[in-house]
Length: 217
Image (cartoon, rainbow, N blue to C red; front, side, top):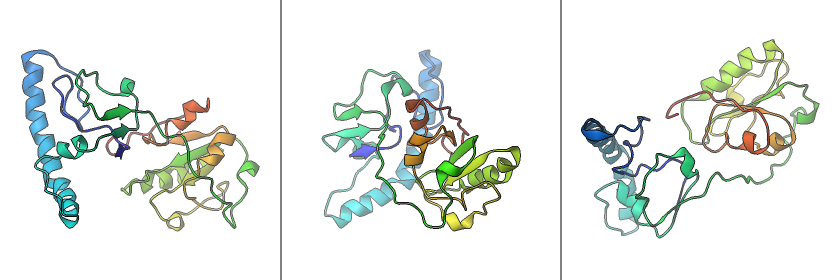
């Protein structure tokens, strides 16, 4: 199993998954974490566990009682981050490996009818949405409205959204496009928003990157 998210694993060394709380030691921290963990765990149990158990039942597998069991069952779980981005803890499960981001994507063929990326004048901004469908299309809409008028060329990678749903003003490459990291490697691009899979690419290539906190960020 692999996880593209930080793992919702309980630990006495770390605050509960989700709210982004700073570690708090002592009795006050233990009380806070116990109360918040109960709420967070309840959300996972109610929203995620029924779907997981439905799929398990379909394949003749016993249901899980806790969401965390899903992460403990596989012999190996690859988490796509590094320990430095996690809360310090001394009780990582034996099956968990923190391996960092996946920096490879399959090459994409040229998109008919789109202006060549290399012909776009600098400065060039790459705007990305999440590959998990959510209501983040407003990030692309805002960038397409605001940045071309300020003198920027814009490439918008729509990921889970329909690219035809976005209007492309002047100095954008013919419209918002599907995801393509290949062009980011060749040009100095700035990335918005801060996405778990996209954001590590900019510093890895020595390029400037920017993050717009959104959703779970």
